[in-house]
Amino acid sequence: MSALNELSQLKLRDGSTRSRLSHRQKSEERAGYAFMTPWILGLIVITAGPMLASLYLSFTDYSFLESPSWVGLDNYVRLLEDNRFHQALRVTFEYVIISVPLQLIIALLVAMALDSGLRGMGLYRSAFYLPSLIGGSVAIAILWRQVFGANGLVNQVLDWFGIEGMSWIAHPDTALGTLIILNVWTFGAPMIIFLAGLRQVPTMYYEAAAVDGASRLRRVWHITIPILTPIIFFNLILQLIGAFQAFTQAFIISGGDGSPSDSTLFYTLYLYMQGFGNFDMGYATAMAWVLVVIIGGFTALNFVASKYWVFYDD
Image (cartoon, rainbow, N blue to C red):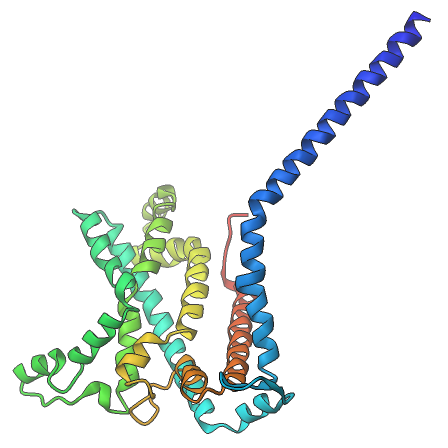
């Protein structure tokens, strides 16, 4: 009988212990959800809600002055027939395809130079990172107009060599190039990430390669680059998304209309012109969703291609 009593008491104690643990777990879960509530509300109210509203508006004829009226796929059909939309796509793709690889190459080269043990590296690192902080500002865009204008710094330097310059931002053949240079100049953010990655490369690989007689270039190509491929991929995705969304530079330098001859008509600039210039918000939101699809497609394509060139430790 005493054994049965002890067994029953153990079961009671075990049951009460489980009950307390279950009550404690539920209390912790409630506390966790309470802490997550501001983020969940922000996701619904600030992100998900406006996105769903914009998706609906993309199928409507809507301005700020009138209520939206359903037009179905008309806005998307207009995109196919809009020549300026096609020009905006061409300009944006050219900007992304040229500026992003150049920016990453320069960022990697500068990071490798800084990682070689330069004295005062903290100063150099800060100086190279500074353009990334201010590169997208209105002040820098205005400064860029002065640098590449008819009487700008570039022409003054060319004048020393007897070369007659021109207004680089006012010529259709060179205006986009000045914006590409501006984006490449803001290589500081990917450079810092590359520099952190270079610090993680084991020195024993370089030592073994040096013993085998590998040159510095071969060590970089066969050791540094493969180990950094995950970081290169990370920087590529970030800079690709950022380049597709470039707006401030084109708006200031082109005067807000894609001048000259729509050579700087970025996708986001044309979207802004339609939405806030022509008050055609339905058409503008349709453009915005097309941009979402384009960025998502390029990102997905890079993730698929990464299986063939990105190498991880495992």
